[in-house]
Image 1 (cartoon, rainbow, N blue to C red):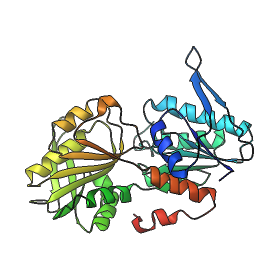
Image 2 (image 1 turned 90 degrees about the vertical axis):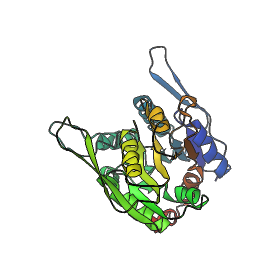
Image 3 (image 1 turned 180 degrees about the horizontal axis):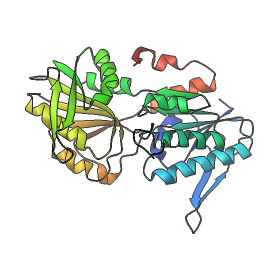
Image 4 (image 1 turned 45 degrees about the horizontal axis):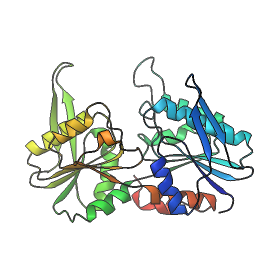
Length: 315
């Protein structure tokens, strides 16, 4: 462990502190401030020459600021002769634009992958990518963790019976199937369609939800519109209690207000993105992925396999 160094940017210091505590490691000192014109200023205060460095930084709001800060920290470490630099990115931003589904649009997931590689990252460790194919955009090793076991542990304590796992859209079927397998529960899908571009969405429930406890699963909640609409359709279809398990709680715009006025009993998110005071709600529960990341970091450092952390949840 003498060769391991844990560094944290400014995006999610609370999670970084938890990971460091799990590893029983003191985070290295780093200065990450701003010049008067807003440019990011970084200085690594501790010696990192020949060390195995893990930089913890989520690409959460303000997204551009946090990505740029991460790139500059990686560059500083590379120029300080760090032996290996692992970018630990609990939430990988810009992953939603992962293909050209329309003319003249970018593939931002590939762009960010290129930026991290050129900056000097040796490998990447992340959680619940929006699209699994983003792993293929990297020319360096990427370890992809899943929050499913953290959620399973949480919901099993509630001892819910007559359970069904629901995907809020067709695109999340693979994730929902993995959760249904772990919970040994039924599977349902909310199919959203529009009659015309101006018409309200028509919701179709594929699967049996009447009289059942429902857990909606997805990787991201931003404005919350899709999730709230799905919960409304499920309640109208006779669902009993409705919960949601979402890996990354962006909760932008008026998402919290929508959630509080929705049919969702409560939302469970991870701490991959910090939940600010202004977003706290009785309907929002936070579970930590610090132990998951700490174990992955430990295994990477000692050149051990991390497949044990997700072998049982292949999608």
